[in-house]
Image 1: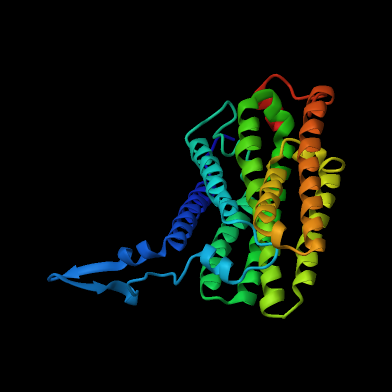
Image 2 (image 1 turned 120 degrees about the vertical axis):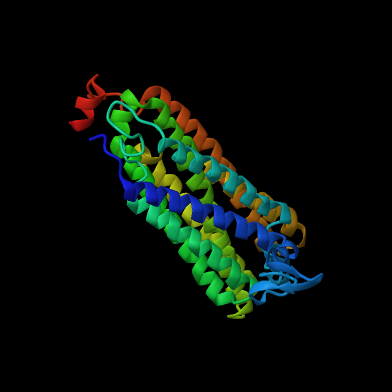
Amino acid sequence: MGEQSGSRIALILVNFLVFAGTVAINQLSAFPQFAGGLFVKLRDFATTYGLGVPPQGIFNSTVGNLSAIYEIDVTPAGFTFLIWTVIYIWLLLAHLYALILLCRRNAVGPVYLSPAVLTPAFLVTYTINLLANVTWLFLWDRQYIIYSSAILWVVCLTNWIAFGFIHGSLHRHGPWMSSHAKVDLWMFRILWHNGIALYTAWTTIAALLNLGIALKYEANLEMQLVVYVVLGSLSGIMLLWFILENTVLDRFVRYTITQYAVVVLAMVGIYIKQYYGATMETGWFIVVLLGVAVFCLVARLGLVIVRACKSPLYANNKVGDDPVLSYAA
């Protein structure tokens, strides 16, 4: 007890570096005209390009431009994609908090190990997710529609797995943290839980949109059927999750609420861009799903507040007053 773990420190640092690289490459994909300049070399007043990278850089287009080319009847308005900025800022704060944990100790030992909320399983899964995120950028940029759709589902799936790992590990240590590390308990809930939820919700929607694009432009499926597949799947996932999180998963995910804000934003973006030019069936589907998403958001907030007051988590906490003895127990 109290000893450092070199392997865990390495995992946290590698995960942060991969995250930083992912954000940097995402920014270069948004502004490809600046990417080429990273590889410019000046020799005797003549410009050459290192690594064989042409002046336009490592990307041929932007994610937004290609989304306009491969538009479907549920493609959201452009402003919706600004959510990536919110996601990366939120996750950056979570990563900075994780780095701070490496420098702190409590009565038991290093805070990143006592308790070890950031488990190897979570860190490895999340790192794979970030690498898949970057892979998707290049596949989408080269317009490999089927492959990009497949890899985006890998991003979505690894997000859900990482989501489960970090919620499970925090719940496992929750009784001890509620008595001896309450601030850290809430920092994990706010930064990591809600940050990963934000990221997971958006990549789930993005995976469905990418699937719709593949069905339309590769499988030549009728547009109305594409709309039913995308919005129908989103409806099913959202309603199933609403039921699960408010019943059997409540003790794990009670204070995770950002996912519905993502769905509401996406549906507002779809409504603004598509509603007035949509078929009657698509228009009704958009409006109803937007209403359901708003209801789920409001209902979830209300349930969280009521349950926090009437049946708080760890209310019957039997953890002792001594942090060392109670942690060992």
